[in-house]
Image 1 (cartoon, helix red, strand yellow):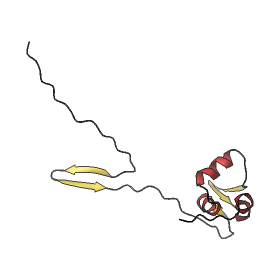
Image 2 (cartoon, helix red, strand yellow):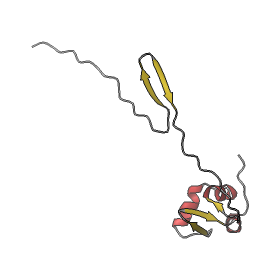
Image 3 (cartoon, rainbow, N blue to C red):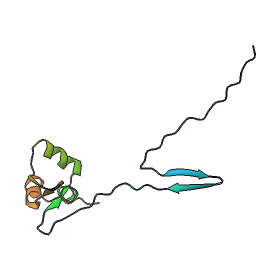
Length: 102
C-alpha cells in the first residue's frame, strides 16, 4: 500500500464583524471598513439627558446606569418611547457633577 501525502491546510481565521472585512478580487484586495454604531449624547429641550450624556456627567459608563436601573437603584429615570432619560438633578444628587475628562 502506498503512503498518501496529506496536504496541510492553513488554519481558518474568523474575524469579528466590527473589524475590516477583506475581499480578494483577482489581483486587488479591497478593504471594506464596518464602523461601529456610535452612541451620541442627547439633551432634550426640557433639559433631560440620555444615557450617554448622563453617564458622562456622572463620570461612569452607560452600562453602569443600565445595571443600576435594572436593580431599581437611583438615579431616577424616565421613559419616552423606547428611550431612557435622566434629570441632571438626579445625576448630581447621586454622584455629584464629575464630568469625565478625556
